[in-house]
Structure formats: structure tokens, C-alpha cells
Length: 241
Image (tube, rainbow, N blue to C red):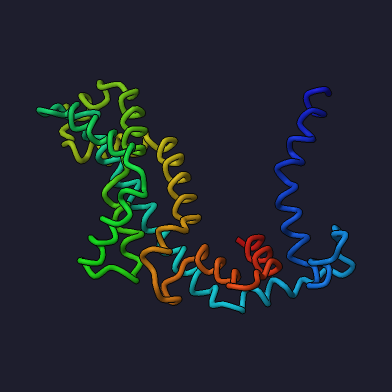
């Protein structure tokens, strides 16, 4: 009984921001700026959700975000697991040094890579397209490679040896044995990347210039004007997403 009671305040703390956002989304303009603040609106304006969604082309923003998230997540899972398999199961000169070098790239902050990446994508003609937000994921990420490599190393080598005795090559061992066995780790990697790609604001802000290529975070930022902020619309779209 004591454990259950102690969890109630903690759960309330997690739910409170969502409830406040929902209540803000259904307020009227007058109730939003009222002082003292109005917590419970007199009339719930559910039409605020439809109004907010149609103020900007959020159907296009949603489509772009879904395309980016799905394609980049698939690429991240495939490339990171394949590289991790190579580091975990193959022996080649300089393997450990290369792996350490790969991990060292995690220490490079985004601020340092931002301008070189923009110059590279601009040279390739990818600016104002979704490619800069999708293609890099198909080349793996150091943290995910490390995570999956450590997971593969927990799998007994005897499984690989038995597969080779049955005539399986390296690709078949990866595709038919290790990939299914990595399912729990792949779910974790996919969840991390999905959330990062879905919530990414700085990347799209740098690479995308036209509203036809905007993602949902950029579309949400359109409600912030130079002189005013449409808090009700921001709350409504936040609840939807």
C-alpha cells in the first residue's frame, strides 16, 4: 500500500504537463491571457485543433516527417547492425584501432560538424531536400554501432561455427541468425533514432528552406511570430503529435 501511494505523486508529475497543454489547447483567447489565470475553461473549444491544423499545411509537414523517420530508421538499423556485426565477428588488421576511432567521433559536437555538413550537402545539391536527413542514417552511428557490437559479443561464437558447418556464409549468418537474435537491441536503437528524427529541429532548420519540405517541428515553429506567439495553436498541435 505504501509503495502504491508513493507512486501517485510521481505519476501526476509526468501527466501534469500533458494535461496543462490539453487544457490550454481548448481555451479561448480571452481565457488564455486572463489574470488571474483560468485553469479550467468555461467552454472547451475543440475546434481549436482543426483550426490550428489548417493554419499551415500540416498534412505536408506530417508526410515529410513520416518519410524521414521511416527511411532513416530503416537505414540506421541496417547499417549500424551490419557494421557492429563486422566489428564483433571479423578479425582484420587495425580492427580495434578503427573501432576506437569510430567511438572517438562521438566526442565531436554537432556545432563543429554543422557547417562542414552543410557545405557537403550543398555541393551535392541536397539542400532543401529530405536527403540530408535520411542518407546519413544509412552509414551508421557510432553509439548504435557500439551498443549493437556489445550485444553481438554476448552471442556464443559456437552458433556462427555451427552455421558455417551447415554451409552458411558471412552474410547468411548475419541476416538469418544475428539479425533475429539482435531484435531486443534493434528495438532500442530504433526507438532512440525514431524519437531523435521525429523531434529533430536544428537539422531541418538548417537544410530545409521551402515550406513544402518542412517537418512537423519546423511547422510548429511557424506559430511563433515576430511580435506574437499563437500559444493555443502550439498547444493544440503538440497534443495531436
